[in-house]
Image 1 (cartoon, one colour):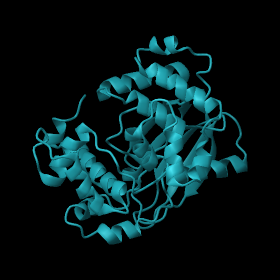
Image 2 (tube, helix red, strand yellow):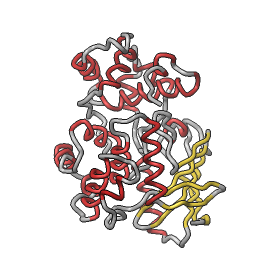
Image 3 (cartoon, one colour):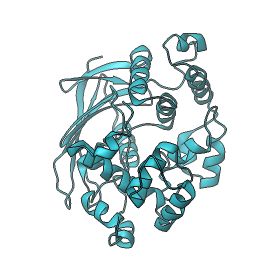
Image 4 (cartoon, rainbow, N blue to C red):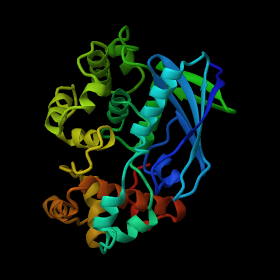
Length: 322
């Protein structure tokens, strides 16, 4: 599907704002729906049936941020739709987030302070809807990153749509209900394994309107957790990721995977990753960052991965499963 430029707009995030560290997360696995280079991100979106190709360009500074947003589509878009889409972009990338309370509380912290300094102006942010996030989460389960990339690519190319815009060809996600006529066996034939059943159940749940992301954004944390746990294949270990990335609960941090345990042991206590400290000790340490526990971890985590991207962190390289 070839798209044409429909709108050329400006977005003004709250300061301070670091474009690249917000729009590019080196720890995220490579997928075919986006392309990043310093100062520019190409990203596909699907919203209310409209398939969009969007180019975000950094045209501001850290203290006077400004983003040039170029929206591409194959049909005309109403003014109301564009306003609604921009509100969604602001939400997903936290463009209006006030970082000052977090910086004021932890800017001088012995370990977190230097990470804040290096990542100053970074927002938590990701482009996916709840539905998309869950599908991506399923393909990330219990497998090396290379295998996850392979599965996601196969799913996108089977059920997504290729979009051409701004000299790029990227894949666009599908909407809930796209898999209504697809059997679990057909999904399994794509070599996604046991995940086929999870993917099918998630699609059914959303297409039948049993969960609504917009409604969930407006309820309290406990209700969000209860509704998410009703989803097939979603357990407590998955919920806290969703609470942070999708619902922006900055203090929710209740689980540490064995792989993360190794990384945090080295990062916080300089312990051998193969002989990590207990998760209980790690959680006690992380509790000191309340009421921003997960936000603090996000700063530590992204700081580590940016270091690795720019120069390779030897001990982390040994833990990355390719």
